[in-house]
Image (tube, rainbow, N blue to C red; front, side, top):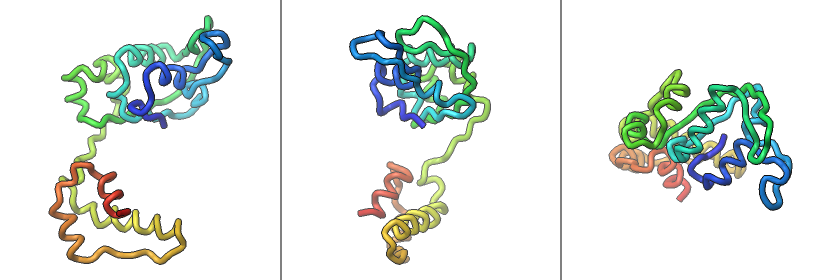
Length: 172
């Protein structure tokens, strides 16, 4: 997985495509994630945070099944499958020009929209149990439960931060 929102574009390009020796000061021959994912799958998390220019380069990779390391002269064939996520609805990302339409339709073979946690409150007890069991296993302590009063509060709360907010709330 690669979090497209967490890495600046110039670094993201080198991370994805790799670098060729001499491309810039201190550059070495180094494979990128696309090359390392050969024969496998790469998760592009928060694709809508990637610049449109870099999305164009990614589109070419998907179409041509070839990559060129930053600063390289030759292309290398690759065989990589892609999974991508957006932190906003894909329709909104397209309308606001956060995702190139041609890239979206290359990647959107299957689209799975996961509703916000506030729209699936029946998942809250399951998620609480999962997180609490994980922490108990990691600390070798017995798992704890949430009280009925806390479960009721959790059910009424809108969870703007979704599952991550629930996880952090439980940790606190």
